[in-house]
Amino acid sequence: MQPTATMLDAKVPRYTSYPTAPHFHSGLGPENARQWISALSADKPVSLYLHIPFCDRLCWFCACHTKQTLRYEPVSAYLQVLHAEIAGVGRLLDGRVPVGAIHLGGGSPTMLRPNDLITLSQCLRNAFQVLPDADISIEIDPNDMDEQRLDALASFGMTRASLGIQDFDPRVQKAINRLQSFEQTAYVVDGARARSIDSVNLDLLYGLPHQTVESATSTLRRALQLAPDRMALFGYAHVPWMKKHQTQIKDEWLPDGPERYAQAQVVRTLALEAGYQAIGIDHFALPSDALTLASQQGRLRRNFQGYSADRCDTIIGLGPSAISQFDQGYLQNAPATGDYTRRIIGEGFATVRGVALTHDDRVRRWMIEKLMCDFRFSRAEAFNRFGTAADNMMSQAMQIAETETGSLCEWRSDHFEVTDTGRPFVRLIAARFDAYFTAPAGRHSAVV
Ligand SMILES: C[S@@+](CC[C@H](N)C(=O)[O-])C[C@H]1O[C@@H](n2cnc3c(N)ncnc32)[C@H](O)[C@@H]1O
Ligand code: SF4
Image 1 (cartoon, rainbow, N blue to C red):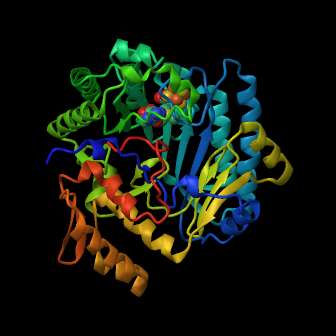
Image 2 (cartoon, helix red, strand yellow):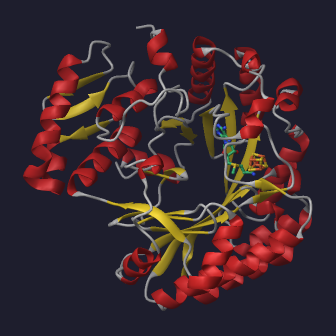
């Protein structure tokens, strides 16, 4: 089946949480953070997410929460506050709850000076009981990297290097204000592996300005020469109403819906031919990678960092804009670094919004996460988890499968399943289970 223009032009959430972040509200604050952290159980490790909201360059395509700074003083000042937040959460946990995973994202964590990276690692280990086999992944802007930073990341205990590439075509790089040579990228991959950091993830984008099926193919082929363990092949999210600098990218430079779809299909085919397994909607991993194993064993998770093999149910977000995920719901820190700083200094926590989950939210969250990870959910498992509260949802699922005309999904004996045709459009299907979704025009990124 050829996708229709309506399907290709649809704008739906990326479902890295449910309810999605626009539905967080200001009714939750520091008291919830204190209570929810204090209630964590000692036998379940947690994950930490640390946000570094600075970059030394600003790429026009970027939708991340970051600010360009060419001076290091704001970064040093910010790190003092981040240390205070880490120490505060550490005191609440009092070494009771182990940390099983740490993710450093941004922005650009690699903007930190080597000494600051090492001090941050010590601060985390002073505050928390970081497990010896903790999964530690760090987002790397390859242009920042040199021998000292590679050494510092190794000392940090990094187990996965996650490098941003986006595209190697000079014309595309110029249009997105991100010049990055293949040689510099290869230098970082080789440097990480030489320091026994065995897992390498590469981020690539399709749907960028001036990109074509041929240029996307050529970029993917070059990326494959680096033999990554994982790749994220994201569709470029053009959201200039949220990110002003994206207006530097002219609409007429962007591939249209069918061209984006063709690019997505070709990079996917190439990755599969190269021996990678498709994980969820936009990740590819070697058969031996933890993400593939998690996917095969039905324990793949989706959270704000994308797809994860992390076994921890709780994520504590630290830094401006960082989102925490608890059994009770989600909490988000103040996005602006100044506001975040004042709140941490004033009250120790910077939580400004969030959402507490209702029982209905929990059932829908599980169904949507299952769809985004496994493209299916079973009635038996829903009943096991939620009892008769799952009844309504299962009737709704059957109804969706029956009335769906585009053969995107079906009901099979006891489970709801997205068909192969439907997989690229799973976000559209997930939106059917989203009780908050109202399809506001132009507020989300393109479905493919
Ligand atoms: C925090 S950023 C990258 C880390 C590092 N600063 C770098 O530039 O390499 C994480 C990833 O988000 C993805 N990303 C950023 N903006 C995006 C957008 N508008 N659409 C899709 N993906 C985007 C990029 O692939 C990027 O590598
Ligand atoms: S892509 Fe990375 S380096 Fe570029 S602006 Fe975004 S976070 Fe900064």
